[in-house]
Image 1 (cartoon, one colour):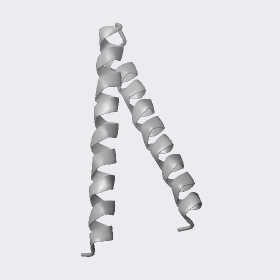
Image 2 (tube, rainbow, N blue to C red):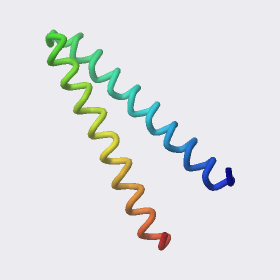
Image 3 (cartoon, rainbow, N blue to C red):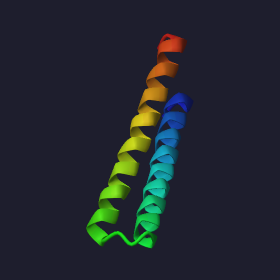
Length: 68
């Protein structure tokens, strides 16, 4: 495994952990707000998807700027 590959794998892992934590926080806050479990899970899923979308867009923009 090259160093570049290792950095990519660690970066993906970090993004997944951060997105999961954001989703868990959104679900927790939804429950605190009085939402039902299905509604809280839906909000958590939406937060996870939004986080991954923002990271993907930022990665694509960075790749376009660096020419890779």
